[in-house]
Length: 310
Length: 250
Image 1 (cartoon, rainbow over the protein chains, first blue to last red):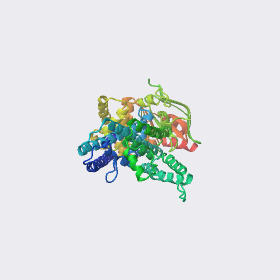
Image 2 (tube, chains in turn purple, red):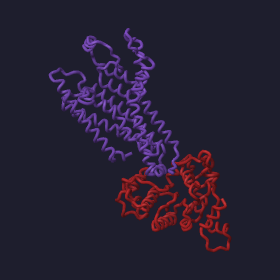
Image 3 (cartoon, one colour):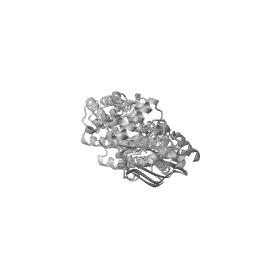
Image 4 (spheres, rainbow over the protein chains, first blue to last red):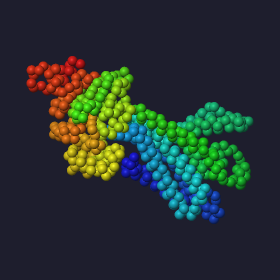
């Protein structure tokens, strides 16, 4: 609904985001300028704007980590604010279907996420083009679009989570805290837990005979499987593959000496767009699935809930 | 059209788990009347209202409101029925006109038409001078009158008022009661008023129903109930006497 745009909250978010966008763009842009001085133009230089870490963090990392906060921010009091201010029963006594309330809340949030993300990407691109003077090719634009879609889905998932809590909990503070707790859980504990589980299922023994490669692979697989339960891992793997065509696989099981690394880097060539897409399609599908699942639960909870304001 | 039933309830029952909130309610409200729905707190008055509006599903029984079943067809009911909840809320950071316009849009009333209606209903509730202020700054009485204005936007045939005068000062109460009375007389809107403030109900209602513990124990014009309960010889009666008598028996 329209009230998002005029609210102070929205101003805050966009101010923050725009600021971060500008800072990242200039920081990274300057870095790239320096690095690429006197070099032939490397491939996909433009995408570096989003993935290179500059001094602190890259844009992609930033959205991966703080994107959920935007989603939570937009949704945590969607329903229970109406309940607290006693407008919900009035709203529902108007000739609208009950589901259109929750659909509108969700779609309005998604619309805002889209606007904000597109705006930041445009800001970074614009500044980037000025700073490094590289115009994106069509493939880079395509990759960016896919990245945007993935990010919107990812933040929409968090929006769904927070709206769900706003349906379930009566108090806005509780729902905000619950959403934050989930966010912390996924961002820190799942990866930690994955490590522990992998150690338990397939321990790597540091014996004198060296490491058993089979065991090593199993360890890695367990760890990956578990961490894929976290939407953050899903999102991070998907976006880095899309935006960094030089990455071959999504996993980072690389054990090799410096010479091997050198020889590998000499034959390094970017993955075609189609191939990157093949790699990330399962990730994207899972993101869509969890987003819809989350919104579905939220929808059902809202439709079955009693309206009594007492 | 005068004596046609606008609300019909047959054996209407609502249970929350094992607790029976409304117990086999039978009720008929005629078009154009002001009906007072009385009962102590927690007697099931609000639940009954919510069932009439299709906001809560009845466990069993039948209801028809303005000719539609609110459970199956809430859309048509809500188009022509206004509901003012107890302690109604508004979007406090908008002014009165913005609040009303939002409701008008939800009712799919085009902006051209709604602008006129908004002014008209603000005039009816005497809020035209305060229209530019944010609703958050309104007093309780003003909020309640704004609630009536909001209900009037959709030009309803029937209005449900849930405790419309609770928490109002004497002056605010009087204005509210006069307003309700004039709506019924001048616009021929049927009014279904739930309350436990008996002297007020006595002043404006044509008929009353008394609900105690989920069941309707009495219904009819106040004089009739007085005759039945207090004896014919009594000339000065109050609704309170009648009510207390029923209440003690229940």
